[in-house]
Every structure is written in C-alpha cells, then in structure tokens.
Length: 86
Image: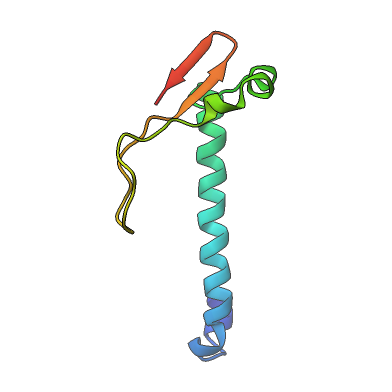
C-alpha cells in the first residue's frame, strides 16, 4: 500500500487501510487461538459438552448492571482429563 500512497491522497486509501488493520487484528487473534490450543490452554471434550452443555456457563456472583467491564468469571472448559478453570 505504500506504493499507492505515493500516487493517491490518503483520504482515498482510508478504507483499504481500515480493512488491512481488521485483517491484521483477525490474523493475530487466530494465531493466539491456535497457540492456546497447541499449548493446551484451550481444550474441550465434544461428547461431554453434548451431554452436559450447562457446564459451559458459569454463573457470575455479581450481575452486570452497566456497560462497565463485567467482573472476572473463570472460564471452564472440559478435556479428557477433567475440568480446567482459567
């Protein structure tokens, strides 16, 4: 895109710049997700989830009443060895 910037006003490149920023963020997210799966931080047992889908939801001690950041709630995921809390 730097080559285009030499010939076009930046205003014309804003949408391309925005799309590039989105794709860069998405790629970073996917790579982090894959790394979590590879390192064992994100695992699941599909059969156990089908049998007990309610185990995916952990009730929060405090309801969220505003647009503030909700209180930290541990994420519970299942794997073949049992539960993991994060």
